[in-house]
Image (cartoon, rainbow, N blue to C red; front, side, top):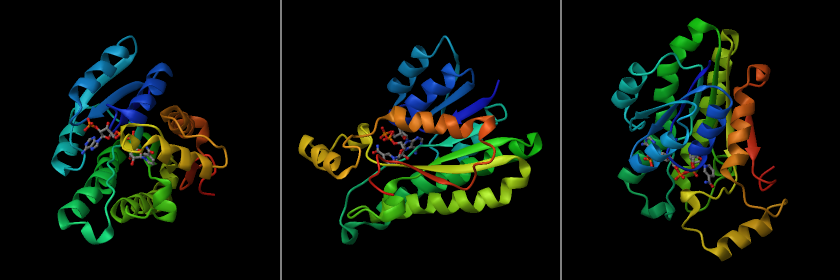
Length: 237
Ligand code: NAP
């Protein structure tokens, strides 16, 4: 049975990914930070499968170290935890900048660093990082978010080069607009406008991303590494 750790599994894309991995027969570590109630509800929902809760703020290296000392060897790591903020560039404070990079980018560095020694020993590993289409093309009023998500793309490509001979693949998914708490601030007319701009004329769901993560995590996906997979209805090509 493969061990999977999903950061930010309490809600949205992470929670849906946890459901798919649990149903596929993996042992799933559900990481959460603030949303204890949602995390416990998901844990209850998935009780018939093999799941465990692990609390950690993954933007903090010491908490990531502690979390990894409490789990068995991780075969599949999904770096999904993230936050967004919409601000004019000139309004972004030092604190906003540092938090954005810590939650969206440094967290992936800390988790990869902790997971890799076991993967290298096993000569098997799958790392899937969640970027964003705004990391590919840049989003107005989201410079710090776009920079962090572009950093995830660089981390993915470089780490894939380094780990290729160790049987470890490192890929990233760049989602388009997905209906979760992260986009709950968008109005119906915002969604309608975004839909109009999307070639498929649809808004994405957490399932669209989760099933792509599952695909990349498969043992048979061993020839795919260092890639950025856009799951965005054609919004960015
Ligand atoms: P969401 O519904 O807002 O959920 C965010 C998740 O990240 C929560 O489970 C949250 O856990 C966790 N998280 C945040 N900070 C954390 C921290 N410091 N430590 C541990 N967990 C933390 O967001 P989502 O839409 O599912 O987004 C998931 C990923 O997809 C993010 O990386 C996001 O940037 C990316 N993405 C989303 C969209 C979209 O349109 N929704 C588009 C492109 C990319 P707690 O609540 O327990 O703290």
